[in-house]
Image (cartoon, rainbow, N blue to C red; front, side):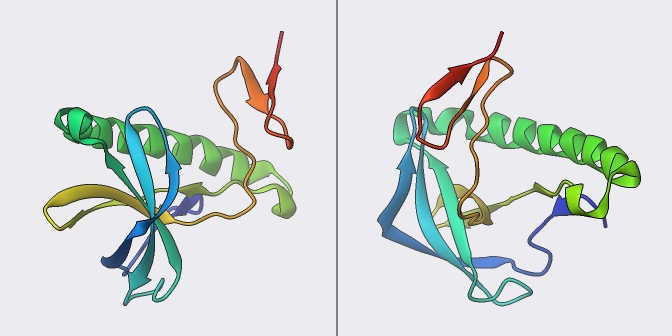
Length: 133
């Protein structure tokens, strides 16, 4: 297993809470969930699904998302080989679960994260956009 990949290992089931929306984007809705069984048993999860009108792109999206995660893990592993132990990088790599006939990208819930966007800037602690030159 990768030193930089944070995976779900033996947790292959999740209970979806369709009444608890964590976030909504243009293409997807993110629901709360809980892992069942395995190494993440009873831990919180996020379950991301495409809105109905965009469900046709989900297979391509999931494939590309995993390719991007694999490349990020490769870079993180290289970084982790020479950085200080308190500066290691872990990349969360989710799994696709089918729940009630719908596909969800399921990942461990990460609380208090800092959201970074593209190389054009970042989101500050107060939620405002900060551009980079």
